[in-house]
Amino acid sequence: MARYAVAVTGASGSVYGLRLIEQLLTKGHEVIIVMTEAGRDVCGHETGFDMPAEDPARTLLRFLELPLEMPLRNACCKDLFDPIASGSYPLDGMIVCPASMSFVAKVAHGLSDNLPSRAADVCLKERRPLVLVPRETPLSLVHLRNMTASVEAGAIIVPAMPAFYQNPETLDDAVNFVVGKVLDVIGVEHDLFARWGV
Ligand SMILES: Cc1cc2nc3c(=O)[nH]c(=O)nc-3n(C[C@H](O)[C@H](O)[C@H](O)COP(=O)(O)O)c2cc1C
Image 1 (cartoon, rainbow, N blue to C red):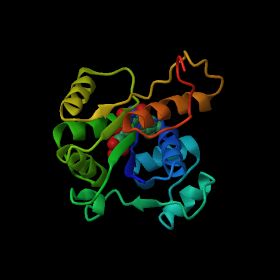
Image 2: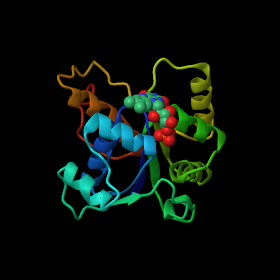
Image 3: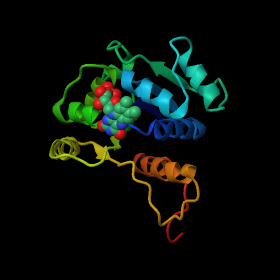
Image 4: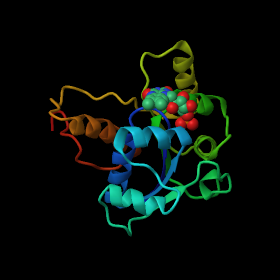
């Protein structure tokens, strides 16, 4: 069993983050979720899931219709004392899903001013997988440069871009494709989409 941090920031596409958490837990992995303030707001607006201050992890498990004993822990965005802020804490990787352009800028420039940006910075310095799932369009030169700098520093970018060669029939199919690509890069097996040629 691996242990992953999943940050949900204020980009559109929080459904990707929630589906990713559901998949990681279902595959037997431990998940630490951290939502930025904007991430919480956008998630509430887009999915109807409002992360409560009281019992957030169990509330999310209920929302995802998962067993309440699954290993999900909520970390507070402002809590720089959380274990994932330290390189000595054994984390197998972090996925920022969705990743706002503001967050990508922080990663590109080493700004560790809250828990998720610090945890991302820790992944880079410890050479652990850091996956960014941006959802922005169109992209400015600033966005492109920040993504390039993030990749140069060791991050992996999996843009939230559903493919059509799978002939998706529902929005769920499109979401599953993006989340499946994220799972592919961290080496977690899944059956979220049919593989070409297999
Ligand atoms: C409904 C809504 C959708 C948004 N979608 C995006 C988006 O797709 N990509 C993006 O980079 N920012 C998006 N934003 C802006 C971010 O939420 C904003 O830049 C915020 O400061 C990001 O903060 P965070 O990185 O701490 O979550 C959106 C904001 C709102 C209210």
